[in-house]
Length: 466
Image (cartoon, rainbow, N blue to C red; front, side):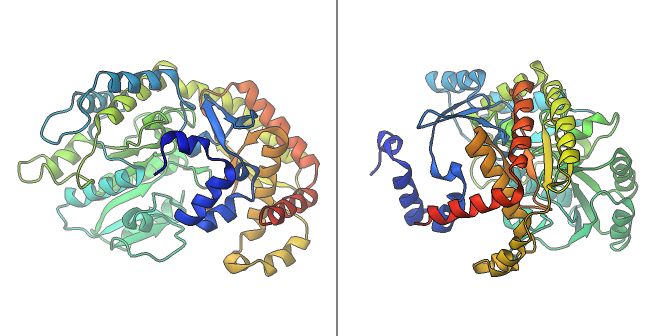
C-alpha cells in the first residue's frame, strides 16, 4: 500500500503508469500532448503553480471556476486547520449543524429578494438536480416538462447530463426535457406554447461559461415575466459564474430587481478546498414543496450526508472573503485589462482570432483558421477524431495553449462545449499586471504563426508516445 510520503515521491513516469493501470490510459494519451501533462506540481499558492523542477506557472484557468480565491488562500487554510485542531464534529444527521445554519443565513443575507431557503449538497450537478426536483415537487408532479437551452451545461450525472445541451453519448435521463435557443425569447415562448400548462421548470445559465456567452437583460427579464405568468419555476445556474467571476456577485445581480425562483452555486463556493454546493430557493417555492412533516426530508439529493461540517465552515469563510475583499470589483479590474487587450489582438491577428467574448475575469478567445494541411490531417485522424467537425479548431487551439505554457509559463484551457474557445479565467486574486502579461504573451505566441504552432504541437505529441 502507498502512503502519503510514497505518493509525494512518485515521479511523472510512475504517475503515468499508475494512471494507465488504474485510472484511464486514454487520459494519459490525451494529456501528455501538453507540456503540463508531462510535469508535476509541487505546490500552489494564489494564482501560481510551482512545479517539481522549480518553474513558476501563472494559472489562468482559475481551476475552471473553482479557484476565485486562488490556490490555498491563507484564510481558507486557517479555518480548515482550526476545525481539525479543535476536533469539531464533521457529520451527523440527527444533530443540528451550526455551520450549515450560519452558511444558509449568510446566503440569504447576500442574495436579493426572498432567495432565503438553502440546501447544501456536494456538487454542482447535485445542486442542479435538487433544483429541478424542487420545481417538480412544487407542482406536486402535475407537470412533466422542463426546458433548457441548446448550449446548456449543467453537469454529467444522468439527470444533469440530460439537461446539458451538447451531450456526447445518449445516456438515459429524466423524461420531459425540452429545448430552446439560448438568448432567443421567441424560441422560449414557442417551447412553452408547445407544452401548454405542462412546464414545471426553466433552467438557464445567465452567463454560459462553457460557451462564453451571456444572456441580455431583455432576455432574462423576459424569462422572468414569462415564468411568472405561467407559474414556471425559473432556475438560474450560476455554478461557474457566481461569487464575483463576471463582475457582480452573481451575474444576474447586475440587473436590479431580477430574481429567479431558484439559484444554484458550487465551484468557488467552496473556496478551492471544499466540495460543496447549494441551491437557494425563494421562500414560497421551498415551503410549498417541502415545508411539511411528511415531505421535510424529501429535498435531500444525497443518500447519506450533505452539508459536512468542515465543508460548510470552509464555504462560510469563502463567502465572507468574496464579500469583504469585493471580488466583483477585482473581476472588473481584470476585465478592464483582458477585454481591451484581447480585442486588440483580434484586430491585429484577424486570420487567427475569429472573435473575443467575456465579462469580468472570464474571457473566451475563438481561435480560427490554421494551415490548410490540417484539413487533410483532420480527415486522416485516428479513432473517432476524424468524425469530429471541430477537430481542426480544437487542434489549433490546443497548439496555442501549449505554446503559452511552454514558452511563457502561462496555463490556460479550452472548453469542450460550443465552439471550443481558448479560455482565460484567472482567479480573482490575480494581479491585473499578470493579466496584462498574459495578453502580451498571447500576442507573442500568435506572432509565431498557426502553421508553426501546430507543426510543433504535433511533433511533441508524436514524441510523447515514444
